[in-house]
Image 1 (cartoon, helix red, strand yellow):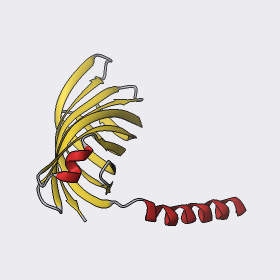
Image 2: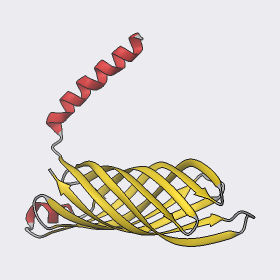
Image 3: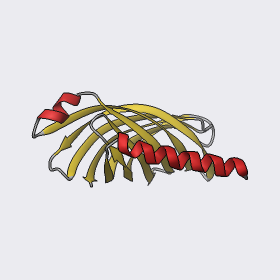
Image 4: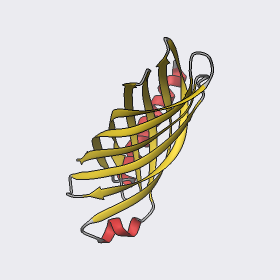
Length: 173
């Protein structure tokens, strides 16, 4: 019990001090994607399928980084999945963000998360991880569009990988 109180106190103190060192904007967004997955069917043969996936994003960003919690789901072609990911985006052209009125911010991405996949009445869940790249177009101070590509590997027996081209709209507050 004492260890939990000590760790909680240390975490609160650290976060309150870190707030002054980092300025960030909060991000709330929705996204739609065209996803492909490589899986094994009921008898173990490889199969590929394409789906439409929908999702949301909540997070924070500053001039250099965006950290997001992303949730996506899809249910088509006999495959259903839900995934939740923690995503870290590094904006690679920082000077454009600081100087231009029309802002294009290309980024590289890394993510890790959890997936639940159901196909042929078999359900399994486990970790996924991967990377990607994209481009954010800041159209207003409060709104930006996000076009990206994500590739994820899984630890599941019947699902090898997922990839998706996504389009999102983010509200920045």
